[in-house]
Length: 144
Image 1 (cartoon, one colour):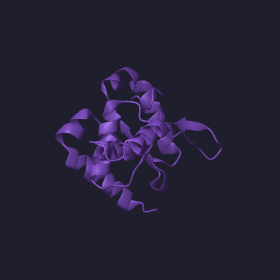
Image 2 (tube, helix red, strand yellow; image 1 turned 60 degrees about the vertical axis):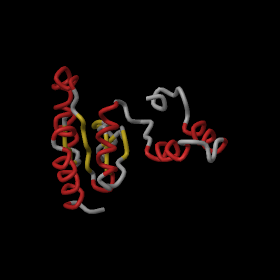
Image 3 (spheres, helix red, strand yellow; image 1 turned 90 degrees about the vertical axis):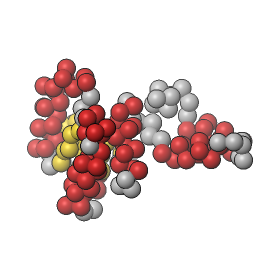
Image 4 (cartoon, one colour; image 1 turned 45 degrees about the vertical axis):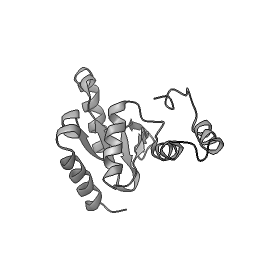
């Protein structure tokens, strides 16, 4: 969140690691920096993304604006595999409040030729293997 809110920059974190090379826990910080994604907008999106990375799935892009062939904006999914045209959404508690717009965005994406998978906290915490399996299957069905 500090990166997303621009409280600190990746360049500053990397510079800190260089200046403190060999210091206790700097190697862990360096690894955390490799895994960061400043565009991620919530802790659950980060958990979702990390679940995929820890399962050795390709690194998805975060918060990518998608457009149709005429250049019209369709939506901005939480995570996106561009080579597979696969959008991934985390539906949190606020999803209930934005259901109508979320449904409209989903329809625009699907009609624009994108594929979409949606997951909740229950999926991520209680059925992580199912999440991983569904994403892996969707990627394998539509190779790069």
